[in-house]
Image 1 (cartoon, helix red, strand yellow):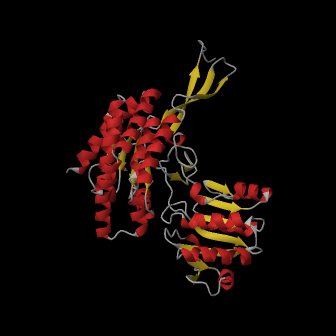
Image 2 (cartoon, helix red, strand yellow; image 1 turned 90 degrees about the vertical axis):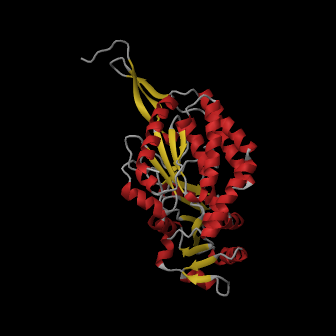
Image 3 (cartoon, rainbow, N blue to C red; image 1 turned 120 degrees about the vertical axis):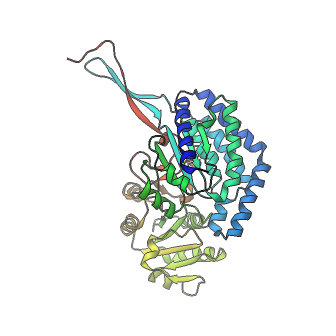
Length: 421
């Protein structure tokens, strides 16, 4: 395959489709989403068969457990994909909405209209659910999209692409509105991220190595995050039963996700009470605990203990490993998080309202949570229908990126014959 010519053709087709998608009606877009959701449910067995081909190849290749977990498309995951598409269909269509319309002294009215970004290139690794989520969000937001999934999920992604195109055709929308890159050649990525004539924004969803490469090489703007170094801070005003449940779930619900807790901070006043209980819970899951000297002393005799190194505070493990630090209180916790956090998601567990508000104001992260697990930092859980990724940038979109994150605005002016004097 001539990668350059192939990607040029994909880009040209996407640009043409983006013009048609920008004027598609809400009814058409919603119909496509519901048709795709129904097709996913109907062909669940075929999707799982395709996924099993991917999993067999991944096991043979020796993929790490965290990647195998992301690659697995369970019956529940298939149901969640379909539910996410239905939820996106039920959301208000942002395209064409006019806000802040005001009269000016000249007599003109000035407002802002929400519009699609155009063509969105999405690069992701072993996550077949992204194919459905990204396609759904891009369809609803009136964009065209080019999806370049990882080679690990090629069979499943191709199967999903057929169902997406079936839904687009059924709703009278252009088939090229969603294109899955059919080659696993990495050169296709290099082409996709250097086609600003055809691609308006790149959304990478993958490991740090992939995103660092794109930051170096891309000539197209990106919506991205690098690491998910997420914290839970247990305050001395915390309900300790809540704290134990939250700290356990934030680490052990799933290890390979970007909103998994990687560092646990505990106020000194409550650490002797709650830390041994948490250590017992983590021991059941064989979680390795990398502790500062004070935490090591409190947990003397417990299994899976190591002394924390400086590098541990800035490491995204994506594994059953957790760094633990005892802090004097809220001030030290905020200082530690703002120094080491990747600005993804951080939680405080506290019954003190004023401290919770301080944490919300002063933690410089894209999602800041009070009294709940970091695992809730997710587009589906936030009611966005799904997410196309998480952004820790501050320009354009921040946090889980749903419909509004895939749009921009333009100024619109209504006149009545006014001329400028």
